[in-house]
Image 1 (cartoon, rainbow, N blue to C red):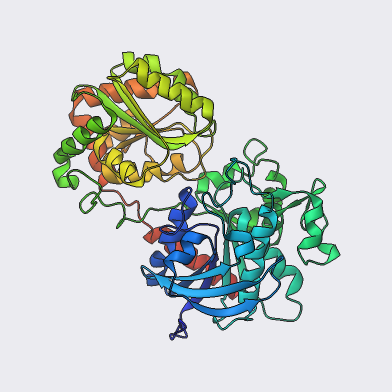
Image 2 (cartoon, helix red, strand yellow):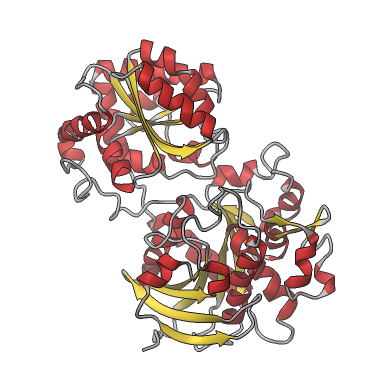
Length: 491
């Protein structure tokens, strides 16, 4: 039975993304695309999400209905499937020649990008355009909301190929400008776009094909995942080579800070915790602290600040700063547990530190969703010293769980964490600590201050309470997205 939208006042949005929680996740993009549909529903917005038909997606949608067949879709037959999962309305592009691959959705077994990633995600974008034109049994969306470079060509297909057909309005959300989808110009001949699309006003980018660049030029509106990041990417320092385009399109650019799913991230109901708790029973976090210590092989210790890092282990995330600070961090009276993967050298250095400081440092390479919840529920603070951070979600989870964020003053980190300066502490509004600079000195100054506040007791508890009682959900941001959609339709 096809899914229908009965209320004529409902605004129809097609979200197009390369990943979505709980089906497939490599980072925060999946959390956003998984949580936003439910948050938009009270705003009178119905969201269907178009995803690539990865094996995990098809397995979860085993009862999905086939609603369209495209015999030659980028080199092979493709089916458009429609189904539901956990209240989410999902469309899956089942194209085995493009997506029937196990493991990471972007990388092959050798850790390198799949060589046909250009075709794989152009196929997703073209499918979005066909849905947008009403070429399938799905009611045509009024807005196509594309996420990151993997979906950015949807705006190009709708711009160049709509001809006299009505087309939906388009929104492109940039979750991380560093990932741009740049490919050899030979790809252009496979995209099915007219020759005039390969110009500096379209897909051409320094002699290559630029997916994100094209979307930034051709989408009706551009959003980023925090207001500060929207400002940063319009500067040469933060624009990753695209700042000129973003300044030229400044009136179309806005920042809407991410939220987290407060049902998934709720310490009062979280089954991944050793002991559930709320702001009123935050003392029960001690049971999760013990569970974290046991997991990482650390002896019980309530006198030292227990820090955590839950992150990709990359330069962008400032992991080199954490590694350089390990000796002074331990000597300052803190301990550290790390969950993540990434740069092999960073992984090796962190594992060596755990051997060197077996009672002070614990490391688990990889990603473990239940463990990430337990760490937020049991650690005192979470370190996020990123050099740039479009929004960040781990600091929002930290706020929700009383795991005080210690963050760089960049992007969404600056927008979501109120620094524990003297005035904010006196006013009772501080929720974390911001680094004065993204440097060894800035990181250690923040850690030493955190150690001091933790030792005092009451100030640290006020930080925890302020974070746990704040609003880190989606309601306010969903209202801004809904307003943006309606503004586009009113033009």
